[in-house]
Image (cartoon, rainbow, N blue to C red; front, side, top):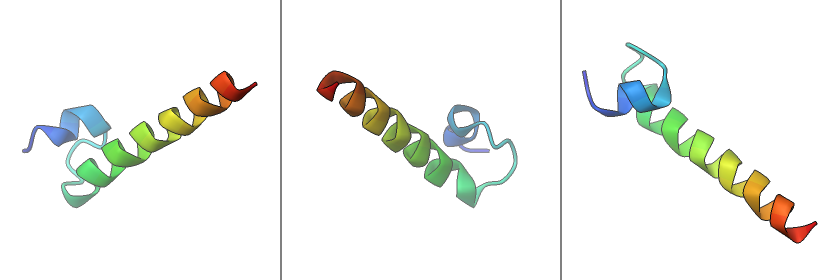
Length: 38
């Protein structure tokens, strides 16, 4: 079990953990950026 599993919330999906965490951070970044542009 790696440290990324808890962050990503995917549990035991291993390889998808870091990808999920990056994807969530990217989506949050886009939402925050659009919120500031409005």
